[in-house]
Length: 443
Image (tube, rainbow, N blue to C red; front, side, top):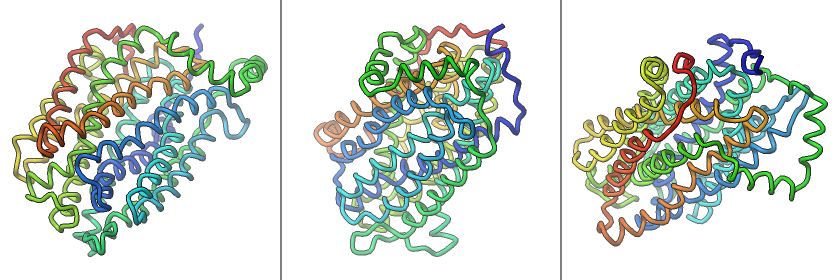
């Protein structure tokens, strides 16, 4: 009998508790994704340098996630378990960073605080993916990742709306004074840091972990894996041992994450130019555009939350890779269509398609991958898989800025078109993915 079949089937509320930390994690990520370009521009960054300054985020993910995955695979504590120590430590560090970032007074300091914040978020986030593989039998993998996606969507909705709520309903100033970050952004980050810490702490103390099947053998293997050189060799050697399914998914991930990086970096200046007719980050119109982007991103977060539990049903009828392909095609066409829109309200429509794609991106690749990974290296391989999330963002960060500046006359909306095309390519590449899981066991 396999280990998977020995794992008990968890109830809805058990899935909720073990995933609730992702509500806080996405709260932090959404505030980062909707406001980082706004913060950098307010502090004096030009459109050509935005993508380079954003590289702090993917670079920290590439460095942190495999290391944290490896360390959590080789951790066991009677009270804290395997993954929860990293959840908790990352949450505290992330909360501190979220209090610091909106108080940066100069651009270089904001970049440093972004590095700190993204590192901390990745420390918390990476073990959550492995947590599903640890606790759930294979037939519940998709349901587990779908619950994470639902809570990610909910966190994204509230965080995206927060600056507008502060402005329109609580009277908080949305205007930069003497070049400083607007109060709406600062207060949103304060609230976000508190929510992040509280949500992750809920998961830490409401969920338990399954101990290693053979604790003595685990301790011996952990002893053998100690040492920096040994750890580095193990981390790097994993590239040569990746399961075939992981390699196939890596190609899909590459084009997917070029698209999302382009969207996060360039939506704010694109909306400011197309809808509010300004490129001046110090203007009230630009800051109003920043708030509207928060609303747009809350729409795609809300759609992803609703889609999270519909996608597994469709996957059971068809297949997981078909669902992922369909969602990426819808998302890619939607993202590229922003080029044609100048109406504030109509800008919400493409976010519906992007939300459908986002729900699948957060669910299907990980559900497919979890069934192809060895249980004792779940955290490491989930962390390694993140390379194929961050490498495309690094390449996009280097390439998109010069493209926008030198070939598109600083019209950032063309970066969104490139992102849309890349997402369509990712959808087509889903055809090469081999998912050996029984279709009937995808929920």
